[in-house]
Image 1: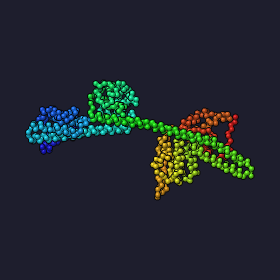
Image 2: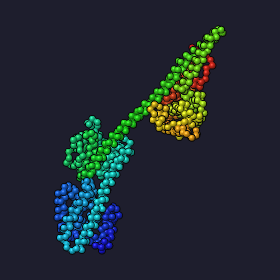
Image 3: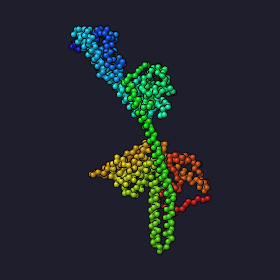
Image 4: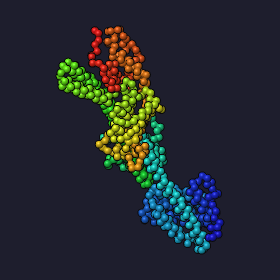
Length: 636
């Protein structure tokens, strides 16, 4: 036996191992020339008794409860099968290949490795008894024992690899399904890729996936592979829910057409695997795989497909919910955007009414009091004093109303653009708060109306928060536009705050409102703050808000075009008077101006009359009127 061990060298080296798997090559390495020689001797002794050994082995397995497919696969990995292969003149490696195939089959039959070892021990007991009768030579018995141990080692090595291959394939299948679930963009893509993955796992020639509508009346093909059918065949009208309610192997040649999703499969394929997609005990869909040969599935494959079908249905429900959620979010976003537009329009309406009605009325009251004061006799000192106080109060009310009008709807934003509006906002802020503000405007150019409004409101909200809470002494504001992105940065050296707590508060809407405004335009909103702490320098604390907003080039209206359009608007509003007085041209005579006006109207830019523009700009800038209000008269 020692001589045999020393003389062992790879029998597999004589074979074309480049075409073999590494595991089969490792098993072949165990087979040596001496081992092959002993195998030949044992084959000569056992050739006539192999069939009897197999029959007795099969009887024992059947008595122990092994199923017929399991007994067939176990018989293929016994020493008797190795003897049969060698007696037939085939190489010993052929036996290793059969062991690997039968091992994968046993793994899919859900037979545990321990049961395989026990079955091989049963066969070994039968073989030992037969070898004792065939030869009484102790040296030969020792050699035979060594050969059996080597063959047993090869079988166990190959079986371990076969089981590993099956489990690894299952793991890779579920990993691929998980990856498909993450990467798919819609329900149709998800189900198509699910079907494609499962076809690769099963080795199927075709696959189809159909879904049943909510009412349970109509079927639709969601995925059909291979995608060589154009148009996609209709769903079998004879499809019966009872026939597909459970996982089933279908013999296409003999099965009724009611069990097939596609009726043409009866002539195209020989066998079919059918797996229902069930929800709450009801059939919601079905997956079927077609095979050109008769290929009956094994228990492990059935369990894998059942689990995959359950995951497929869950992923489909999740994707459908995500699509509904995305549609709802888009609807909410559009509604929020519309509400912001309505809010801006309402601000403009209120500011116009305050200016045209309450503002003019207060101006008239002030003028009437001034007239009454001038008409009172000099000796009515007390009455003149009271009128003067009332007039001063009226003037302060007019100034406050002008401030409210400018805050509600800054006319300078529409007339002169974002840069002028921000300068005016900074000037008003500095008049109220003793804070040094540095404003930097770089490369703004023409911007869409909604971008300008959003940026103005964001800066306005930042100034409100700084004035109320920050206790800052310096504020830096920078606005720039480049590469289709507008960037806004607001930084102060105030006391700071905890960002997470501020965003989580339900009674505070400043930061949350800013974040939502930015999100509506698809921008990015970042806020960082360093709360005040002991020993910290003022320069090391404060708050910084960074905002990036995408600017669509087709929405940009250059400032020059806006000025031309405003001029055209003034012509349009005053055209009737000019035609009667001096024969001026109407705006229809200038097609370019009309096109610009339509472009501005499409972008949401409202164009007020010239008189209203002049009044809004002067009131927004805080310019006090120098003469009494007189209505403009036109010549008839």
